[in-house]
Image (tube, rainbow, N blue to C red):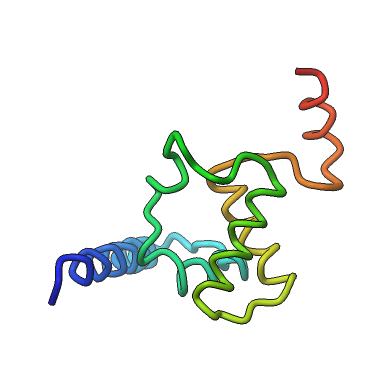
Length: 114
């Protein structure tokens, strides 16, 4: 087993252990969103949090974030539709980026004040 495969398995089992331990203490975790499920199933094995926090990240606003999700799902032949791309982008945006999204008037107004 190569180093990358071992690392991917470690990340996957580490996430599973967190879910199992939370369930074991009676804490009921909220149901994951479609975006979270898609990301955790198809992306997280290679994309650590570092890829979202790095200085030269390619996602710099909502449009570029959705473009990157679309690009990677296409490169890996996942066949996601627009709703799937938007769901994953929204999940990542909520977790890491906090970009204003189309139709998000509060975020857009605060961005315009900067």
